[in-house]
Amino acid sequence: MTSWVNTLYSLVFAGFFTISLNLSAAQTDDVLLQEPSVPAVSASTLREARGVLRAIDQATLSSELNAKVVEMPFRDGEPFHKGDLLVRFDCSAYQAQLAAAKAAARAAQQELSQNRQLAEMKSVGRNAVALSEAHLAQAVAESQVYQIQTSRCLITAPFDGQIVSRKVQVSEYVGQGTPLLEIVDNRHLEIHLLVPSRWLISLKPKQTFTFTPDETGDPLAAEIVRIGARIDESSQTLNLIGRVIKPDSRLLAGMSGNARFTESQ
Image 1: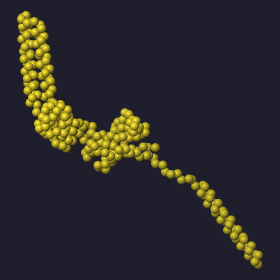
Image 2 (image 1 turned 60 degrees about the horizontal axis):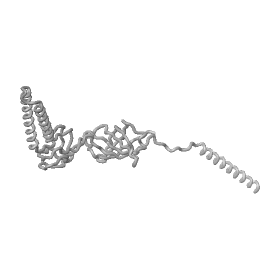
Image 3 (image 1 turned 45 degrees about the vertical axis):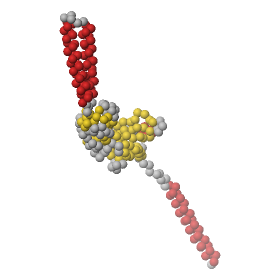
Image 4 (image 1 turned 180 degrees about the vertical axis):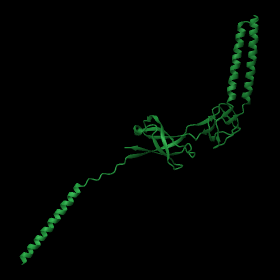
């Protein structure tokens, strides 16, 4: 009896062991047959660079005369239009010199006319006529010089814009070359960026990117308009110029921000 029971237990144990081996082998086969998981690869890469907004039209206006400032109608931040008076100088001395030069030119012209008449009557020689012609030419040239100087007594706006800062004030005497006003037109701005030179191969005009000014935080659609003509050998960077496609009245020259370029793979 005991022998029969032992035999029965042995058969049951052997059956369970065989089933366990078959299940393990099946699970192993399933694992080997599974395709290996591949990490997802992004279809594009994002590249960023810092940029600054610069005005296409901006200037520092300087004096071309030695004179006293008598009028500056616009203050810092005020808008103006092309042709508006920005600075007027006291030019009474230049105007007096111009009047004297014009009078001298008229006298020289009269002298020349008389000498030509006398030369026809053989009363004077040709040298007298030639000398009168030289006097007239000198007087006319001096008159033109003073005419140019008086034309510089008024400085008018070369374009529509705003006053950035006044460098001098009314009643101050300034010398030739003294900076007077800094002006800017914020309606036409460009984005200037320094990007790694290795980007050059993937950059082209009209390529779009986004520019987010730090001051507004709003991303703006932009495009490349020009690519720098040389690479800086020390920093290995390239100058890149872009523009905002849809102008925003909040933008001002000098704003800086992040430019983001998406490169397709």
